[in-house]
Image 1 (cartoon, rainbow, N blue to C red):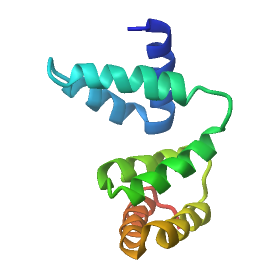
Image 2 (cartoon, one colour; image 1 turned 135 degrees about the vertical axis):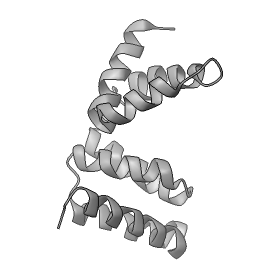
Image 3 (cartoon, rainbow, N blue to C red; image 1 turned 180 degrees about the vertical axis):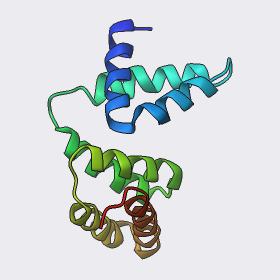
Length: 126
């Protein structure tokens, strides 16, 4: 493992997803799942999210669009929270899901909107 990339990834992962989520994920990792947690932290967060080519707001927009299209509700909800941390507004998140509706289908956009509404309610975002 590249310790420098892992540490960089852990920092970014915490900033985007929040300490509570990362702590839960790492604490629940066992011999079976730990290698995947380490791989995600090092490569996804430490190598991809740290690249200078896109800012975090753009990366979050891309992530929530892909996760909605792929029907990954757990990760989508988590990344909607991350998108808010990365500066996306409620209106911008809505625009992303309108785009999803056209390119990935209405059911994907409807589910994504429902999850976003849950997050907005939990975060007290009017």
